[in-house]
Length: 65
Image 1 (cartoon, one colour):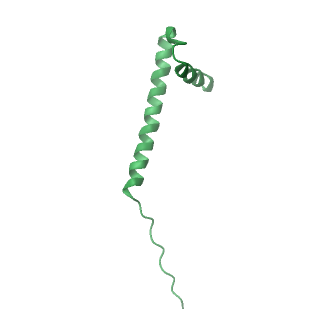
Image 2 (image 1 turned 60 degrees about the vertical axis):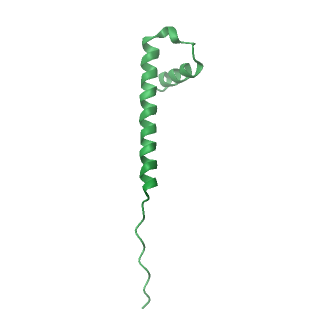
Image 3 (image 1 turned 90 degrees about the horizontal axis):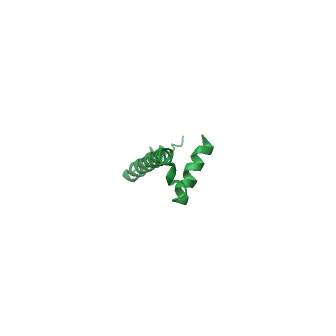
């Protein structure tokens, strides 16, 4: 009878939890900034055309809704 060695349990490094936490923070911040930009562009229509990236993000959100 041959014995197979036990399969070791997966090990989790501290870096994994730090990376997960950072990815979650980035997603949360991205959402907050997008919401803030959309709110600003809705309240202040005079800002349209001032910054091309802001216009692009605002248009993208409007088209995806």
